Image (cartoon, rainbow, N blue to C red; front, side, top):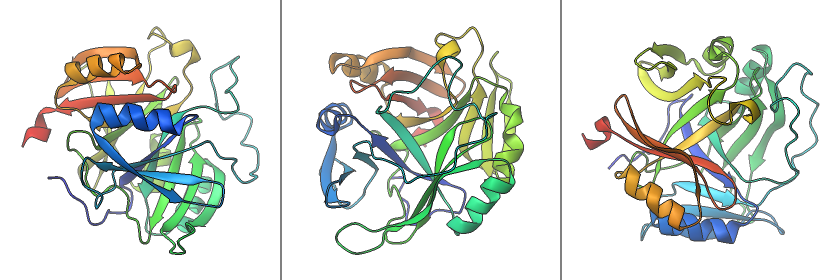
Length: 290
């Protein structure tokens, strides 16, 4: 079992679904991946739903929440590509977000700004109504316009089980612009070293932290389906041992296929929209069987 008790600074550690229909999302992912759920009172008016493997309430693997209003923040620079041209994001939408663990969130936020990124939500303590501070979070936008979250762990380190069927396994930066433009940014902020794969026509960049792969990224070709309206974003992957069967089951549960099951170097993957409109991917890589 791939169980974590801590994370090296710069490691993606947690994924969170903002859903316009949390109850519908619980039903979908509960049936698809076998998750159990526990709702915690984040504030008097907001519930933060923790997701767990079936029958195991000791090991959180993800979370869900309703859309929330971010604290006021400065507008990002005009040249940041927040969305594709001529498109406007709806006021409320469903999406998966990735958190990266850092030792000092204030220092990390300073590096974001110094490297050309934009802080969308300033560092803040996360303290549920139970009273125990679980960590500190912030949200930023990289120079290409893709959003990512920072997490300084305290009582909560993030997912304690990863790379197992039905759990988080990977995050991937998808850009309609050249990914090479943001490689120095992520190297400065997290110490990620890029490694370029050329096994496929599209190419793929693997981000490594102390020689260990922690995330990936790619430039979306202009002729790819939906590329003209695709905003810069970080995609979230879950492990699914049988990608084809998971794809079929997700369709039965109301999901829409974006990229049908296909082989990639080292494994197989698919990408879908869940019934609430959030994009998610799942894969199984050969090294997961070790």
